[in-house]
Image 1 (cartoon, helix red, strand yellow):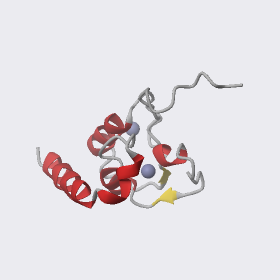
Image 2 (image 1 turned 90 degrees about the horizontal axis):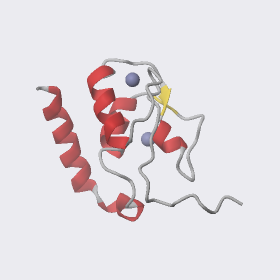
Image 3 (image 1 turned 45 degrees about the vertical axis):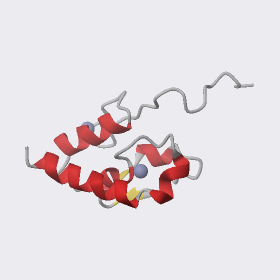
Image 4 (image 1 turned 135 degrees about the vertical axis):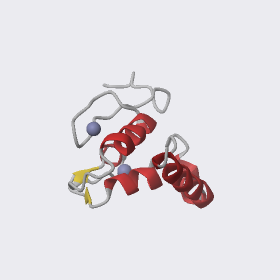
Length: 102
Ligand SMILES: [Zn+2]
Ligand SMILES: [Zn+2]
């Protein structure tokens, strides 16, 4: 029995699918990839989505950075808001493009 796994309380961490850099939470991963892999066109599996209940480990994102910026620019602890945050997504996209110019 694995009942002592806290649900949604701890920050999940992921490994960068490009360089296997470990221990990144979603926002770290986003920053990391924007910083180090913005021009990397290698197809990778999103490590965040894979850990989702319906994650597909075979899904190689053609534009992982874009996917990250769109889907993982905020913590997914409010999964319930996921379908209502178009505005937030847009803000994140703006923020992401803004960051690139720094
Ligand atoms: Zn990396
Ligand atoms: Zn993803």
